[in-house]
Length: 457
Image (cartoon, rainbow, N blue to C red; front, top):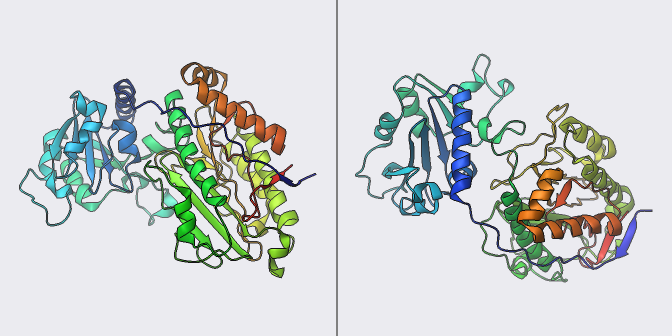
């Protein structure tokens, strides 16, 4: 029987410092990108990045622009990374740049407004590297379907890069196509499956975010400001994957702290996200059902408990070969329309908090070993508010699990311990192939002022 039980949240220790991005990894990714580029018929790929949209560039090079934009141009025999005044020196963080596999160039037009501009212009660099009249792929951060565009417009030519780059590209090339899917598509994208070293990095990120969220939750008390709550998290130094949110009452869910105070009987949601992780929870600022308004009557039995059961089934489907459409159908069957599920029930995560998702209506894209999956199923109800168990996982077949045990045995041990906790203490269905990346996995604590009360199945 589903119920609340007083439990200690698990603590499996602090992960080892994950391995740095290596030259061997970077070279393998550059080679894979060139193979994909050739297969698509592109003479060159142009990869755009800025502070918000750095994931593809960082995955390939280990470099992400700070303050500015950056552009990587890759042909069969050349690779040029363009950066602005402040980022040019920082490009050496890339192993490829450090050893000369990728050369760099100063393009001051990528710099901030009013900074010195007296250098070679962007179109000069493009003309130097890209063959005139060639077919070129442009990589931004999303691609488009025909239903998103005016009638007759070719989706392949709908670019998601700034006009200051798209215009000179089109002037130089014979045809410029949106090639973002080569990196991000859930079925065939280069980034859709992670390596054993990536798993160690993801686990470190999830641990940092989950530990901060745990510190925050166990610090909650009546009258505490939302600023003080986030301060109690003691967020570590990893880059944020998205804005830290903290919303109570009628405040929109994507808001950060605004000076509101914790008051019993308010719904709340909050998250902490680093590159590769997003740990999110939602519930009520309460110690029990007596603190809830009349409009939230039945919150546990009719909303939280069905959600917990559905998340158990979600875990059970996280196996290689399961079609994404099956996961979508299951969630919408178990959590009908009154639960307010509107977004995809699960998606891929990387440096970008949301890469893409194989889980769409009718999707025949199979889940695959190496997919880093975010359990991101967001219910919303006018009376009950929300509940949440959002954490990171990796689907790993026997070969990938064996490689993880060999290369990162402590990470493998912690993932196994988390899975065991979810199965034996919480009662969730967790297949052997699913690696939970955070100690918060499996934890739903609906009464946020008494978070030791945890849902068990």
